[in-house]
Image (cartoon, rainbow, N blue to C red; front, side):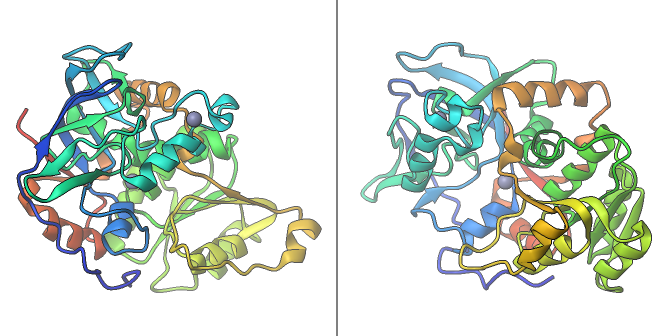
Length: 367
Ligand SMILES: [Zn+2]
Ligand SMILES: [Zn+2]
């Protein structure tokens, strides 16, 4: 697989001791049980998604509340929580209309490397402050977050598996059930089968889509997609996926998802969508890239091009409901987890992710 660009100056990640203050007002101390390695972490590491460094990375995690600061409501020590990588404030114009992933104060805090209410609690002695990653910073045994970043979950669930609901499952399943609201029997396809793409497959199965055609360049990913519920697979390293998809569906699928984060693959997904269909993009491309599509086709063929960030989820509504479906066997997310790793293995594990050898890997802490 082609890397978006060579690893930049910040690689490799260093594993070291840092100081953690707090929790301050409207902040919560969490002991992290586990944290996932996601492609958008790679985008931060390789510089295509600029964020202020030094930073404690990790935006997909779960843990146990250990202490709360003044003003925190609805959370108490010993609560089990999943982190939401967008801490939805609940009061801005976007939150007010239910568009939680577009929360404006949350975006400003993320770009500044701060918590939602402005705090920065990591530091190194003599080296100054260290930034937070999306208000989560899950690659740490302990972290401080805003209460808006934390979704309380039932204590009966496995905390290690709950990790996956913070990014992969919200993003992938949410894209199907919230953004696209896929109807039973709809012909569907998904380009790119990492943790998010496989979650799209799980969501499509849940929604009753048929067929569910999964496309990737790696056989191991296609095998995982079948396990997750794909009814057909196409190896894009062997055949032209657009032609193959059009052949299989009689002119293109109705709802086609893109989870690679490549404008070239998005153009392929659009070309593989039938007239009147919808192309839903979930992957994060390099911000410098532009998409070229035939402009006339949007009108003359009544096509829709839809963006989906964090699966258009409202985390407080969707994480608990997706976890209930997991507990009932309706959303078998175990297929996403390739292996548990130690924090010290983080660099070799990002290499494995970049090479496409694995779907999700979860750093597991002793807790
Ligand atoms: Zn992610
Ligand atoms: Zn908001």
